[in-house]
Amino acid sequence: MSVTDQAFVTLATDDVYCQGALVLGQSLRNHKTSRKLAVLITPEVSSGMRSVLSSVFDEVIEVGVLDSADSVHLALMQRPELGVTFTKLHCWTLTHYSKCVFMDADTLVLCNVDELFDREEFSAAPDSGWPDCFNSGVFVFQPSLKTYNLLLQFAAEHGSFDGGDQGLLNSFFSSWATADIGKHLPFLYNLSSSSVYTYVPAFNHFGGDAKVVHFLGATKPWNYKYNLQTKRVMQDGTTSESFHQLSFLALWWNIYSASILPLLEKLQKMEESE
Ligand code: UDP
Ligand code: MN
Image (cartoon, rainbow, N blue to C red; front, side):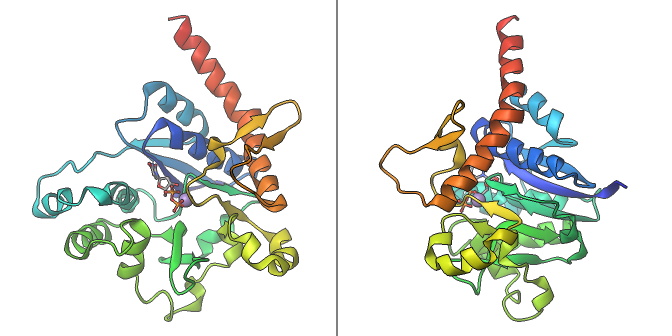
């Protein structure tokens, strides 16, 4: 049974992040989600990449860069560091959906996670660096222009304590930490692959039930090299990934090489023959 008024939503502002969005979208398809898949993009994303996105996502939605000239937009334009943050907030404008789950383009689902739609706005999992804050890589929200405008106004007035969407959203939904435990998603829905090593016994005990992996931090899966023959992620010696990190990276690359690379290669051939 498909549910047409609910969607998983992600964001990719350039062709590089599109690779992550495509793997995320494909992982949701592989696990047979009954919800729609939507991706927000900005004008920078190439037309070839848009057509590849539309073979995985139900909707590819271009959002403008500060397209209106009212006072809130003007105030935000003075804060270029909030650029990507601002773009993520556009997810609240998707009012043709009654409820959505936002997922960063550097996340990957390991099983069907449609039960997330049983949660209400604003639900998210704790951040491993400061657990009284939620991590904004996975969250349940309800599209609403009213909320969208309140968020923009809040951004213009208060900015973001970390310069990104996570600081802004934590200040805006500030009762998250204490008000309603039902809005705390289990950490298994936003397992940061780099935090695993900070509590290895817990990972060994609970990690088998992980549902969503989040490759947060500066080095993303697409920054690694992968050996298509041995199906192993190659390490260049400058970083030291744990066994678990390497196996999550290999999962990402399995999907990328099996389902996404063929789409990108087909596109390349078409562009060459033009
Ligand atoms: N993002 C993007 N382009 C960028 C930076 C970020 O599209 O140049 C989007 C993408 O969906 C990404 C999310 O914003 O997953 C949050 O950024 P990122 O995942 O890099 O931050 P982290 O989770 O590492 O803090
Ligand atoms: Mn992320």
